[in-house]
Image (cartoon, rainbow, N blue to C red):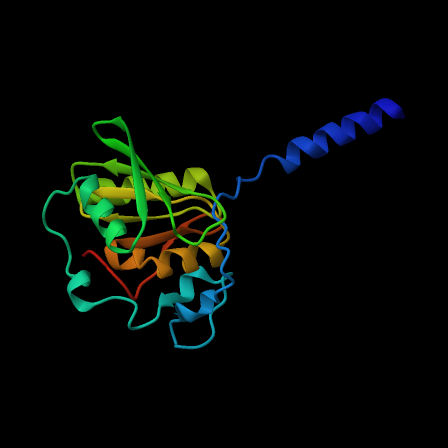
Amino acid sequence: MQRHLRTSIVLGLLVAGCGPEVLLNVTDNSDWKAYVSNRDGGSPSAGELSSLRFRDGLCDAPALIPERTTLDENHIISFLQKQGVDVRVERERADLVYLNVTGVGTKNPIRFRVAILKSREEAGHELHEGILQHGEGSWGLHRANLAVLGPIGSAEDDLRFAAKLKLPCWGMFTIAGRDDTFVIPGAYIEP
């Protein structure tokens, strides 16, 4: 009996540790619903990602013009710095950079993974695959040939954090559902 109990406890701890580690925790108690609505303009539900859109007025019109040039990490770094964010860069490879950011209203510093690819199609595919690999709570952005993977959080914190920093104005915001990814419209979009 005691051996069975120990086995159950160990298995329970292993299962509890299998979920994704939440790294994004917005601490300012702002309401995520201030930034999104459902597609009919009504009250949003984080459980219905396919029906969400960013509210009008989140982005300035010039920011929404699709990018036609090849970008590097300096494009997203410049955008973040204009938002008042402190950015520290770690270059992993020529095509992979990590951005460690502070001053963003979160409990801990935030780390973005920036992949520099050859085309916007590759960037979209890379982001989609990365989000699916990390699972529910994962999100990211892509603009032109850049794919930016954000830290895992609740859908509410992911949306609130991204909107407060106007990240959906920089790139196409994509978030993980239970078994697929969803692009949330209403901000930057690429054809």
